[in-house]
Length: 97
Image 1: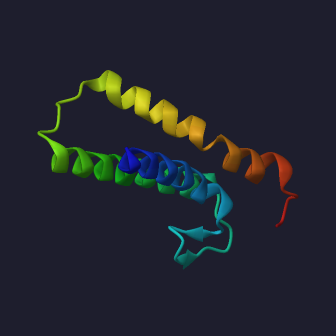
Image 2: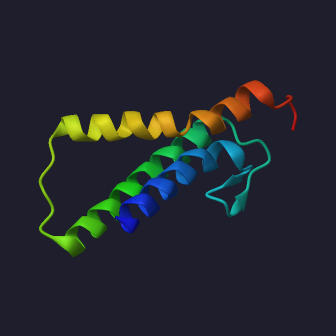
């Protein structure tokens, strides 16, 4: 149970990092990180969290095979989790910051 809570918290944080941080993947400083870089970083975090979830499931039992509906649902959930960072970046922040 603790692993699921930890994974959910990690997913919520990872979904917001591309919009909150001015650095690419938290490491590389980018002068003007535009939406394309943020979207690429957001997708990379989605796959990283999915990989971590798969590894966690494989430690407990044999992983279930998933259809496209599962991936669409988790992608939509990841998008909902990223809403606070997106709003902060594009609606609350003043331009040029």
